Image 1 (spheres, rainbow, N blue to C red):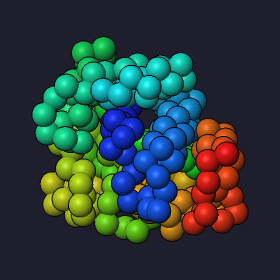
Image 2 (cartoon, rainbow, N blue to C red):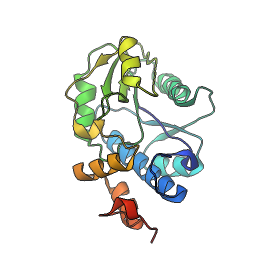
Image 3 (cartoon, helix red, strand yellow):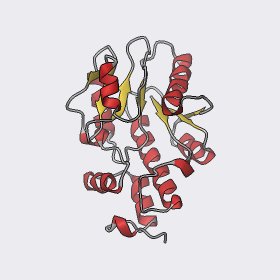
Length: 212
């Protein structure tokens, strides 16, 4: 499993009106809960986090992830490719998956069900709005051909990847906006995000977050 994570000062810019400090704290919490859920899945042999943020690396390594330096060009898809290469170097027989790092309510059972039910070819899970992608699985040869970005759902479909319909809501609920965060809280978020929200005094009024 490959999980790319941006440098915290650059993360979650759409979580307005939160400060940069607040956005960074939440981005780290989201990534932490995503990694915890992935590491716990019996369908995941190893989690490779691709990042060049030292704070992210320290936290996620402690949670069981292996860290891959994000020193490749190509933005998000370049980072995913670096993680894919590292995963296959570790075990060339491995089927690789890429997962976004902003799934604070991810449940291990939802991730596991998607992974074990996927066909042999490339496949993906669309996000809650339906135009993005939260999970992309390689074919049996480890080919991902990631096309994350705006309207990635359609880019992945056009590239021949199969949409996995019926994926659990926690696997589809990524967080980019305050509205997304409110929806994720309603579904239930993990321990790291819960702690960050309490620290930021973001519950119950997300629009009035104030660092305690």
